[in-house]
Figure 1 (cartoon, helix red, strand yellow):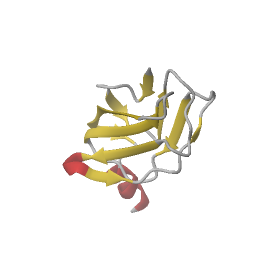
Figure 2 (cartoon, rainbow, N blue to C red):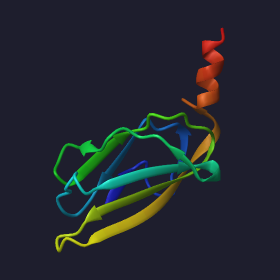
Figure 3 (cartoon, rainbow, N blue to C red):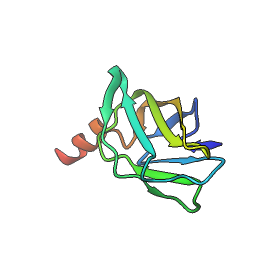
Length: 109
C-alpha cells in the first residue's frame, strides 16, 4: 500500500529505516526485504520486525548510504501462501544529510 521512503521519492536526508505497509497481515518468518544502492551494491539492513500494525514491516538501514538511486526489493506471502514480490526505487540527493561521506568527514575533525 505504501512505503517510507515512498516509491519515486527524492530525498534530502538519507533514510535510517525502511517501512512498508501492506494490505494484509505480514508473516515475518517468510517476509524478505533487501536494499540495493548505486551499482546494485547490497546495503545491510537489520532483521525485519513488525511495525505499529501487523500489516507493517520495518528494517533499519545499518550500512552506509551515498547519493544515488536505491532499489528496495520485497517479498511477502499472500493470503493463499504464494509469494508476492515487488520493487521500488528512491533517490538520495547529492549533499543530503546523513550520507556516509559526511559522517566520515565529521569523524575526521
